[in-house]
Image 1 (cartoon, rainbow, N blue to C red):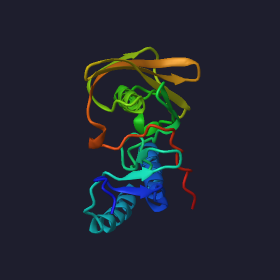
Image 2 (cartoon, rainbow, N blue to C red):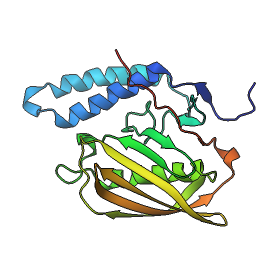
Image 3 (cartoon, helix red, strand yellow):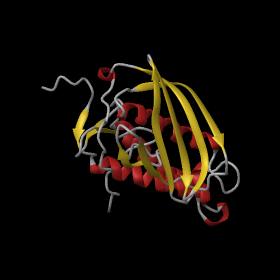
Image 4 (cartoon, one colour):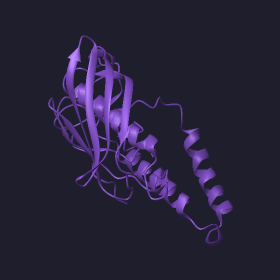
Length: 218
């Protein structure tokens, strides 16, 4: 038996990724539906039936990690990167290394704050997660103590975005990181953070570039 105390599976379970994707699509459809063109009460009853079936099989802890080709782990149910979590966009890692990390992300209408723009809280959450991954990839996993986000332009949704982060210096247990979120060449937001370093044994850390799971198919 593995000595690792964390639940790790060999790759992202396809059924879980498919369910997360379909619920993500449902959320997007639900915020864009026309009230006068759909029977929302009937739809709610169908969703309720599925929810009850899933709840009957519940009881598992949400933390579930996938051991990925190339090394490291993906947190399957994480609300930012987890393909199994319908709340996650999810982030798709294109580079994870000691110098910097980079992820692609596509936010939708369900993430709207100002008209046509992503809610600032989601922008902050994406940057926070990327900076945490950056310090971990540099060999110093940490928890965010403070996060400052500067919003330079409204962040569009339904447009491919790129988030990058890096560890810039270490002062004892304090880790200083910076990052940015871009839409093409336009910098939508930048962030600086101070994280507190903790022992990697408290949580498995990806130090190599993970391969993001393929989009689930029917």
